[in-house]
Length: 367
Ligand SMILES: *Cc1c(COP(=O)(O)O)cnc(C)c1O
Image 1 (tube, rainbow, N blue to C red):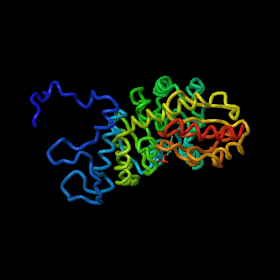
Image 2 (cartoon, rainbow, N blue to C red; image 1 turned 90 degrees about the vertical axis):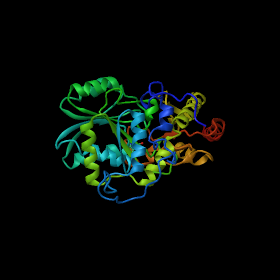
Image 3 (cartoon, protein in one colour; image 1 turned 90 degrees about the horizontal axis):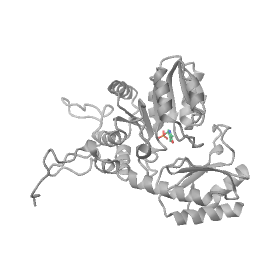
Image 4 (cartoon, rainbow, N blue to C red; image 1 turned 180 degrees about the horizontal axis):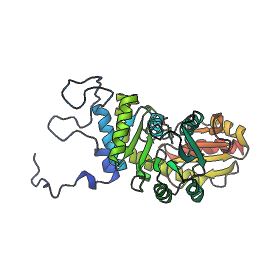
């Protein structure tokens, strides 16, 4: 039955005015036309009939486009999806000119630091690693830098960068700024609004959110950067799988609910963990779903903990609906400035009482 007073063009809300939860649900949908599917279909195609805009499956795909529209709307820019977060990192670092200086956090995603170290070893760039929470120290390194790479909060130390000051200082020095926004998600931090040139995501984590897809993305407001990145993606083929883009978009529809719940659970767990005798340190930036704890009795206690629980799963990665944790120094390449007994916890969306019962009984056994 038609509405008696359908909204006019003037009174109907426009997508640009919608709030993040509504954007997460509505962006990247087909137009509301009779018989159109509500959701972007999974378009499995390597080639399209010539004469249109699509042409070939390495250039574009309608399912990627739907995911890119949704994430672009959430971050407030134009999005390009990549085969993984690290494919996006690699594509961005490839834009930096030969011999350029790149300033980056000493604690950051291992693959990002690893790529920088690899580029430096091959004489491509000079990498300067900094404590990203020490704003003055970072600014002091920006002279002649081509790129400031920011991750905030950092993995797994959970240091928080002063984004507005760092971005402004980098631009004064003539450097581009990339912010890896994987831990915060666009719901808790919008770097483009703070002036960043590029936002990077491992959509594998919170955006897809169900531990079932590896996919990355870059978002920018700069049309020129977008064109250059699209050109690089076409050329090197660092494209997402169609199924992965579909899964990531499916996940994105509930991002706000999952982030809200994971954050509420994390905040409650932090309250209960404070002062626990088994812990030497408790790190939490005040927002988000990641907590890092340092076991007072070091590596062995941390390993015991991650093998004692029944609900918490010993696994790397983060941002899924299920709670996972791991001792980070089990990775040989983890910086030695990360304590041996540090366990990074990715808090999921289960009932917090069950999470606490499982965790606290394992911790009490250690204390
Ligand atoms: C996982 C992760 C990456 C790499 O993403 P992949 O999708 O695993 O390639 C980059 N940055 C951060 C902060 C991550 O957590």
